[in-house]
Length: 233
Image 1: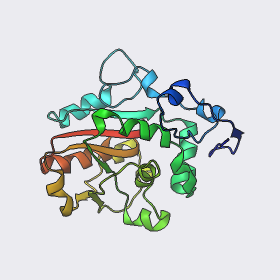
Image 2: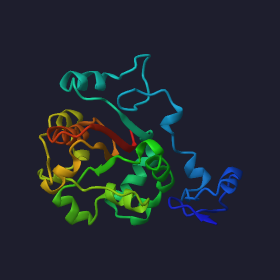
Image 3: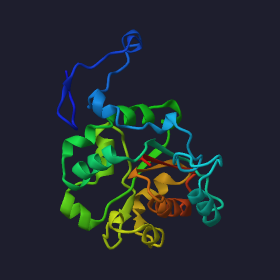
Image 4: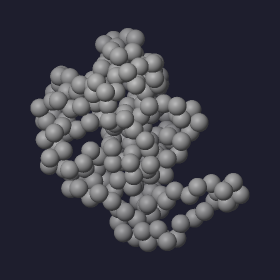
């Protein structure tokens, strides 16, 4: 019996025949069918090849990515987001990240486990985006690290937030784009990450500014490749 983490409704979980035949490890979805139906899975939508935003036109890259490519011509754009950011995800993030409903870290265990256990992801190093010391004191946890830990995904906290602590959510688009580098690399990880394949992980991709700040630092130490990932776009 499944108890939905979002609305509290109880449902009987369905098992697929292939799960039984191939002894596939079952990871609970942690949400009822009604709440699940509110999610728009981006893998089923036509999206920008650079940032996973749902396409607004027939171009392969959205206007944001065209501008980013002018600033980072040598950067290989490869972002994966699971779902379109909508009201359901806004409420989930509000309750989890800002109101501290720690249970909600489990909501995407199934998708995170499936994605990071794919064969082509196995030898990559996963690095979560850090939060400021101010946010850590107020919240008590880094929401991205907790999402990964809840799903049993190993990660390297190789980035340190040294910014002012002003929330990105409090800034308008122009202010986000003009924000200064808020991170530094933990020197203990530099030699470990050199020549490695990296996946940077955040909860939501909005403008991409945060992830590009992090990628800049990793490029400086000579990592092999950089991909980015988020729950929502």
